[in-house]
Every structure is written in C-alpha cells, then in structure tokens.
Image 1 (cartoon, rainbow over the protein chains, first blue to last red):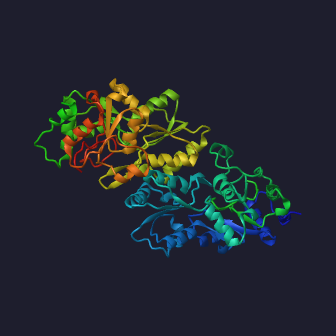
Image 2: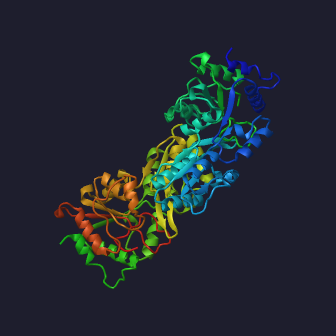
Image 3: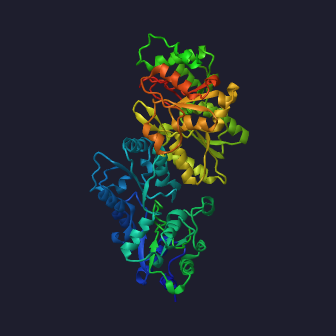
Length: 294
Length: 294
C-alpha cells in the first residue's frame, strides 16, 4: 500500500470535518509517525522562526524550529558571505533574525513582507538607498503576490519588490520560494534529491511552479489563496495533478499525492509542506491546507 | 538665422545665471514672442490644471490652462467613452478634475501620483477592487519612475502601477508620457505633425524615448532628474543629441536644438516643453530646465 494512503489511516475519526486545524494537527502527527520525512518550507517574513513555531505549537502542531526552512536565516547567510550591510525594509516581527547583522552604512536593501510598514516614506527611503549605490543590490524575502487574511486578500512582498525594481532599473535577488536555490537548500537539509520529494501548496507560482522548476513534483490544493482564474491568466505554471477538491479531506489528499507519482514504487521520501492553520488570525503564507474543507 | 538662436537674443542680460526660474520665465516669454509654437506637456497628476497654472503664473510664467496637455482630463475622456466608474487612488490635489465622474460601484482603478497616499492600506484597497473584477482595468496617469524634490528623489506613480500589475497579473493602460497617444493628442491640439516638433525634457524614458517612438525629435537636458547612469542601465532610449551641459544657459539650449535637426531648413514649428521651476517647493514632473544651471 502506498505510504501516503497509509497516512490517511492516522486520521482520528472523532475529528469533525469542519475543525480543519485539528484535522491538520492530526495530519502532521500522522506524517511524523509514518516513514515519510516532513519539512516545513515557508516564505513567512513577518515572524521569526521562533515566533512562527511558537504560534503553531500553541495550536497543537508538532513542529520544531529545526524543521523549518525560512527566508530570513537564508538571507543572513548571504549577507555574511558577501559582506553586505542591509537597509532593512521589514516587519518588526522578523527583526530579531537580523540581530547579528551589521546595518551601518548600508550597501544593499533587504525587503520582506513589511505589511503596514510599506508606507510611502519607507518605500522611498529604500529607493533612495538603492539609488545612492553604484551597484544596487536588492534582496527580497520571497516574491509572493498576495496572501489571504480573514479580512480578505492582502498584498505580499512581491509587488513592492517589483516597484523598487522598476524605480531603480534593477533586478532583485529572491530568497525564498519560488527560487530553486531555496528549494534545494531544503532538500540538502533533508539529504534528499529533488525526484524523491513532493511539494504541497496553494500557490501556483511560489509553491507549484517553483518546486517543479527545481525538479520536484508538486501538488496544488484548492484552499487558502487558490483561485481558479489565476492558473490560466498569468501562465506561470501548472499543477501536475488535478487539485484536491474542497471537502475531500485527508483521503482526497492522499489519493492526489499517490496520483502525482508516475511510478508508485518511486514514492515520496519527503513532504515539503505548506502549512496554514485556519484558526490563526493571519492566514499567512507558509501555511497549508491538507485537502481540508474551507 | 535659425529661430532657436533668435530665441536666445530674448534673454534679458540683467538676469543673474543662478536665478534659474527668472531665466525660465524669460525663455517662455521669448518663445511666445518668436514664431515657435509652445505647448506644455505634463504628467503632473498631483495638481489640477487650474492649480498647476496658478502656481506657475504666480512664479511669473506666461501660461494658460489651454496650453497644457495633462493626463487627468485625458483620463476623464477615456472613462466617459468606455462607461468606466473608477476607484481613485489619487492625490487630493487632482481630485477636482474627476468631479464629474461617477465613482459608484467601481469597475476599474485609476492610479496617479498619490504621494503619501500610497499607504499599504490604500494600495491594498485598489488591489482588492481589481481582484473582484472579472476583467480588471487599471488606468495609470503616467508611468514615471521617480522625480526630484528639494529633499531628494521621490517615487512616482510608475513603481506603484508595476506593483498592482504584478499583484493582479494584468497590464495597465498608461495615460500620459511616454504613451504615443498622449503625444499625438498634444500634436493634434496644435495642428502639427510629429516631424514638425521637438520634445525637450529631462526624463530619458517619459520625455525622450516616448516622443521618439511617436516620430518626434527629442532633446534631453542635463538637469532635474537627469542621471548619467540611467541612460545606459535600462536601455530605455537615447537622446538624439548630446545633452546640454550644466551652466550652458539658454545659448546652449538653442545650439542643441539647432543641432537636433538634420536639415536646418526643417526647423521646429513647436516646442513641447517640460517645465520645472527651481523655486517651487515640489520640483514636480512636467517642469523643465532650459539648459539653466542647477
């Protein structure tokens, strides 16, 4: 029996179908008990890993900092390697990740999902820093277009990255999904090859297309910020298999994962998991639905 | 003697070289006394034409509303023709131009240089309106990258237009320079053909490249937001002749205009003038230096 189907048997039958967070908690629990390796691959750039993991643990998820691949620590590595001192246009929630970074006399700009911090004044300051540099360097923590909050769709860092690119006539370096380098670092951390892993996510660009360009299989779920029209409008990418239908629950996910592999004997060794709890106030990027209802 | 050289003889010799606004006032005066037709072609979208002309007249410039080609009234014509009801992301200073426009139940977004109005909240609202539409329409009053204020370079509407384009996966319709339609409307208003006119401006994209794509000659001045590096970095366009040197004054401009014509007998019938007074608090787009020092 394929391992992913075995997973579904771990779903506690007592959980009501509408308690999607509880359902997800049980799925993570099931994944960890199975022989499948799990890693959480996030573009979250408003929170430090510590805060992100803390929030998820309070919701009941079995997750530790060491299981998370996130853009802020990856960016810090790049800054140190290249002797870059950033001007930071970031959310206060993630600032602690940059505590060890020299930000004096900036020679680059780091942009992340700053939310309300994307004021005209702050954007203009970042722009002016770049324009003062002979060789402007702009590092962007992800390039997501938007995400979903309880109040509706919200602009992510990508549009603001594009704004600075256009204003300065430069191209940003993206740290995070969909950058192949970011997926490869997650694979390295797990000691796996691309063909051994499958990416599950709701974003056709950041999750599905990004993972596929890296040589991984990918599966798109019809939840979170999934919107049918966007599959076709931009031509950014395609899911390898039919997205899971809403209300299909864990069994639906398991079947879709099975179907994503041409050869059932070549089953996944790892799930790279986008993980989005429904009960969190911010339904932020880097969080997934496992075929649960919404 | 070429007409443009004749112009220079109108420069009052009593004006000190540093009083660039007075110098420009005299140039407009001289242009109007000459046989050259003058039109002011602006992407100003923070002020109504009435306010813009009022400010310039107080600075001594001989200019009337009827001599100005501006994007706000051009946009209103488009909205009426196509039955569009805009959500307006604009500066309060230009709102009066849209007094006659129905903004109920929006079926498009109009974006202009909103300055401080480009808050995260306002950008997100415009984004949400677009995402609710089956066929999102985004009209942008210009697509300038930045302009110069006394406090430094400032982001213009273009970067924010790009942000919404990327977020929604759409392409904006630009009303204003460098749209060839905008230059053509200015030419129509003067009853001239493109080959009879020369564009003078400091923006290699909005002014020079835009006019050239429309079939006009163009001349870039080395003042205002001119920056050498940007000519080469983006590959957006080229000036037809060597930019006027700083401190070259009116005579330098006249010589450059003369040199811009391959056949001296085919002299300009019109100057489309970018007009930027140095003493205005906002050194806003749509204002030119005539080879004066800065």
